[in-house]
Length: 165
Image (cartoon, rainbow, N blue to C red; front, side):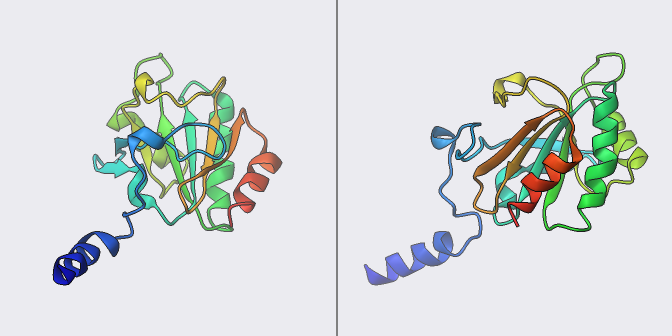
């Protein structure tokens, strides 16, 4: 019996991903564990939110047609050199209103000199609530939602990021 428990602890207890977060206990409000998702990035690779447990993450919902999204991308990319966090952009639409795809995600990353993930393929059923673009959600290293901001304000987003450090 003790060997079985030791084996189970070794297999399941040593993983950085063993945070016990699951779909049943997630939400999109401050203080909630955000709901997990997996999307493709600009390189066609899968990017999963929960795999980054242990590192603060700033999720940015943007669209190619959104002027303030472009400004925010430039500014936040600069902040990645001052603070320890992953900046992930979820690109929703092209300038013509079509859903974002890998070509557009790659173009966005190249335009903004981003080494950070630019994702596409967002589905409304993922249900992250925001009222405007860009929309930011800050998640701390314990995978808890600690901040949200709709629209663009460099001082405001800097403070939200700083509070997770």
